[in-house]
Length: 421
Length: 174
Image (cartoon, rainbow over all chains, first blue to last red; front, side, top):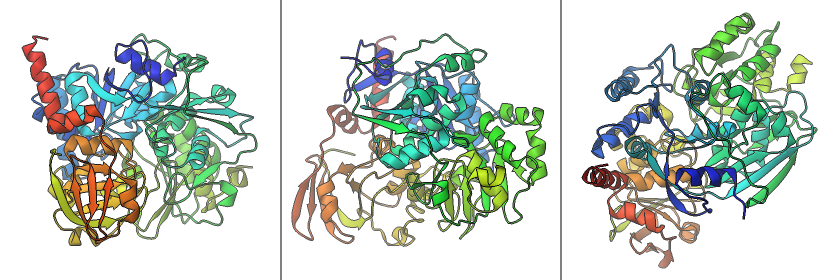
């Protein structure tokens, strides 16, 4: 009986030939990650465990990205805690403001996550790295403390669900639209405790940035991880980045899946998730007349170069609607620098958009774009729960960068072709 | 979550997909103690909850409780406001792990959830996995925990489990 890529990676990290869904394993981790919200609790648990040294100073990464640049004194105190711990433990990868980026955009860019790796992070969107053919999953701070201390965590081997995308991808439809459509299909717990494996001819055509957007939101369907096969595109993307050698694994043709879906993308419209669940998805033209106060373009889902390029292509020579505040927040300093080099920074500024330093801030209602009561945003982020972006009576509509940028111009949620032709 | 404990309290009944953003909104995530976090537990969903919840009360909710963010602040906030136990039809996976790791008792019991209303008096035997609704006089049995998780629970949570593992390593000279 064949195995899935997820099962093979878990087996390889448990010192086993093969594993089966439902088994509980102690697995070796290649990388353990925490941020300025989750690391303080993880460091506290690490000390309570009686641990003195992290298992490997090159394999524990701290990324102060959520409430940075420090939004208030309490956030500054938490960042100081991370900084001191990084120094004390001699961590090789700790990123200070000015070099930091949104963790799930930053780590792959830095070549720290590679195909076949097993990564745990105290952040639910750690599942993003599945785009490169790694197994990665979000855990809490105490689990992360165990990983920091022992270099191991316990995991249950998940059943896998196979999603095969076929057909021809229409213009203005990207990875974000595909994953929103998929979550709409199966629901916010449709993949609970399971692996989502993305495959098919459309996935082979899809850019690495779009793959990141898809794997990123696997958790919004309740999944443990989302994963792609590393292919030629992946290897090319890693060529100047990878810091170590790696081993590409892939699913056997006779691997066993709990469920299989075939999704025909031909004729698909850009997708929008209405408040207050990421599964509340409709094609953009069926959203109705929805005026927006704020547009947010960025995040660990859509803060990459391709996303900025799509947004800039729509905002080029156009103006943000007078009633709208548009905030662009690229994922990393490298993305931001490239925006400057390619002239997109001018496009955004001339359009009347604000451009922020990389931060998770607005996505979780932390800072840099919090919504007031009754306000409505369209955002390329990943969650539209009650109160996610600010006041509990505000609303968030989720979309890809094309719909978000076009809506910024129109002042209401529109199909990109309505603005950009 | 210590074995053998019997809990009793009033039920607070909520729906499905209670996410960690409504359990504890991100604006409070610079706090790290259960007391500070507990003061804002569920306030975006039910502003009266924190004011009216009594020590020992229980949260009873439908499917996918604790979905969303990995914030361990969520089970800490629930503990911090005095809730003794969460009974849900099902739990999101990271919340499930976090609750066990920080010692917040949780039980998966859709049958009990289906018949429980806010204000019902519940008694829970954690070791037996038994939920008794005293108001309507019915008894339910929750899903048992897998062996490995029972071991973590019996050692008093993940911190103690790792502490012992580290001690063993030291003694083994590893």
